[in-house]
Amino acid sequence: MARSLDIGGDFPLLARRINGQPLTYLDSAATTQKPQAVIDAIRDYYERYNANVHRAAHVLADEATAALEDARAKVAALIGAGEARQIIFTRGTTEGINLAAACLTDRFGPGDEVLITEMEHHSNIVPWQLLCQRSGAALMACRVTPTGEIDLEDFHAKLGRHTKLVAVGHVSNALGTLNPVADLIDAANRQGALTLIDGAQAVQHVDVDVARLGCDFYAFSAHKLFGPTGIGALYGRADLLESLPPYQGGGEMIEHVSIERTTYNKLPYKFEAGTPNIAGAIGFGAAVDYLGGLPREALRDREAALVSEAIRHLKQVPGVRMVGEPSERVSVVSFLIDTGHPHDFGTLLDQQGIAVRTGHHCAMPLMERLGIPGTIRASFALYNSATDVERLVAGVEKALEFL
Ligand code: PLP
Image 1 (cartoon, rainbow, N blue to C red):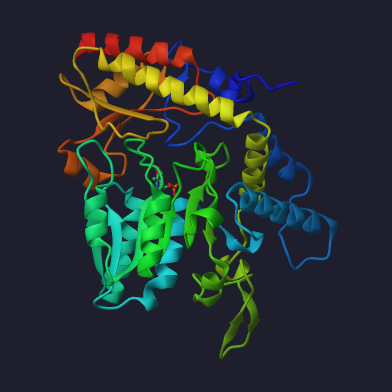
Image 2: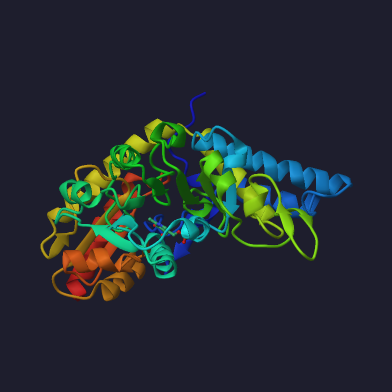
């Protein structure tokens, strides 16, 4: 029988009441709620087969190792990576980008350029600033249009023979803009530049196929994909990963150690020093399984319809100003109110059980480009329903009475 679109019941937390009201959770761009299946998988690991992975000769360690590697294979399949060894487990998107930047630093020098955009999350800005500070390379940022899209003319003007790497977000966490990453990667490839895509906001909402995209790196976090916090994945092109130096030194990443020198383990372990987040990886795998059992197409269509409805209604509320009108958008509705500060407004919504996020959303250069201090952001996920839109719009109208 076809799975119903009403999946909210899979997420125990969504049944909570907040401030005496039913919860309308519209902060999934910050982190998604977790289905029972993910909670159970983590608990099952700790209850039945908790052990450290690899290098061991007992049943528990074998089971834990098999579960960790099974999760890696599932994550690889989710994003179309040809081989599981191309998936490095990280703490999340932030660590994935830092890992790539740290390991690439030696390849950069004065005269080289890294090209990002003004739309990036700080996680896709600061690691490149650090790379530039250490190597003498220059950081270039492509402009964003007033509607919240990458200014493609500026991108092509700034992409040149000095560009050694292009790092772009797949989806903007602040505005929901779905960027034309396939075209940007193509253009970068033609210039001979490496590419890294920050997929933190994309993987839940669009089908990602890294092989088809042709990017060199793709970073994302499990917790924005119904999985646990503290775990994510960095996909890397295998030959490139092979050629890079390790990220951190320690156990697991080595092949042989003497006091004088060390030889390194094969992929992906070369980049995974120390005991990994085993429970997190198992939870990540369970989240991928959970997603695989959903009617994703239909759920995404519904989510897109909810986002459009929310925008249509909010535009009609006097005193509400929408921020960003990208032609292709997923999940996020950002707006401002004329009469008050976003933070006070967020508190008034919270009193009604409506969870949104307010502020600069870790995208200060974007806020500066748009000339605003921050926004009120409602972000949708597959478990939201028409009731959430109704409650958001009614909640906004009510909150405006107080400001
Ligand atoms: N990039 C984008 C676009 C994000 O939205 C986020 C988190 O909000 C990150 C990177 C950082 O993700 P994490 O904090 O899971 O490392």
